[in-house]
Length: 128
Image (cartoon, rainbow, N blue to C red; front, side, top):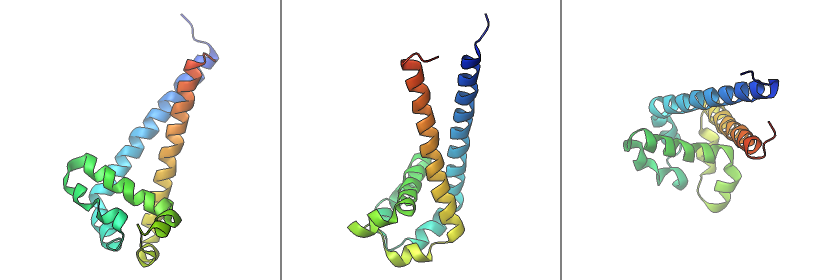
């Protein structure tokens, strides 16, 4: 049984995407467990984050949900500033390197999800 080159490319892209998702989850958990105190201290006046702060004690899922809220505030601050979910001073004083990591992690996650949906659509449309 031989595979076509399209099947091989599909498999490689799928494996790379899956590995990227696992690495992204690992980096997210690392940030959630090592930098959460720093992030919460800098965002004490942001209701969108502080309302979810008790999730910090809810295990890995809670930490990931709280990190997701923080990444959302960092990625789309205008949306949160407009509705009062974020504080401009807190966002300005947030560490720049950590902010960049959170934004890159957020967009990487969206990109990997988009690739995954593209692979799923390829299977359903029987393009390979």
